[in-house]
Image (cartoon, rainbow, N blue to C red):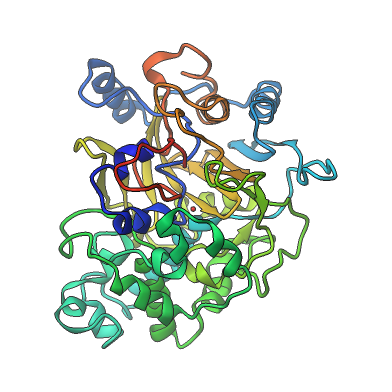
Length: 455
């Protein structure tokens, strides 16, 4: 949804609490969505999807994917790397520059900060403990973390509410990055080498205004997944990052996915540029950053090929049993300000209806880095994509006047996932904003229209 819609009629503090989340979905570059809910075309699309699973062209058009990826760079994106699959047919590509100063090109195998895609990994870890009988999804958080969420609130919020963002706990971002309340980016620089503890992040989140009663409604909050990480610490007796490395990352056979041990990315990578909708001009490189502020909810580094392998393994039953996968894919609606369903959020995994059917995955963002990962229910058709310039949209960009980068991303994603069905200019109701509906990733003053965009 447009960022202006989310922030209108909110206080500045509440706006910022939603504003710099680790997932890029609500304010991300426009990709593709099905026809508008309530229309005859939408009803037909849903019926078709339920009847056939997916309605798309089989196989990948490698040359068309090359062209559509190059178009993203031509539209203004510094660098973009992408990996698509259709069964055994695999394509990888890159376009643009990894360093605007030297002109060093991006490569398809580059490592990248994937932001809130990390949440899927953490949710898998929690669900593995559910399978072992160590965690009950519907038990109160206070059972496992007594006193961390104090008083009656800790007894009313369940583990499930943390994972599907219905706890009502506010986001810790305004406390960790206080200058963002005034739309001043200086906190980004102040915190570049600052180390946050998980307990500190939780305290910031609990100090923010509540977003609702426990279990009442979806409201994205990174604090939920700090608590999920602490829960893993408690029940496994291990640091959450160590547990997830062994039982999720290595179990999925991922070779280039890891929690960074320093502010530096260890493998080949692009510089990651943050514009903050023109408030940082020229955009500044934040690829060197202490990611303790994102911990078990957004600090992972990965490649696009690894992300496709992860979601393929997950959806194929390689990390969770059938009962836990059913829980993970039990969703709550994500609504826009007018009450229309934009997507469906499960436990660290969301469902998005594309023109050719339903896909599962997550998106993510860190300062200067955006990531998208979606897979068909059987894991056969996949796209994972990374960009190295964030919040490039300016005033005036929105659904009626999208940024050229948004249009190009839309066409590339639809071509990769649907074989071109609905892609391209003039495709009408079949196109829109793929990840519309979760939350924005940059703050704007209350009651001030802000550009649509997409941690």
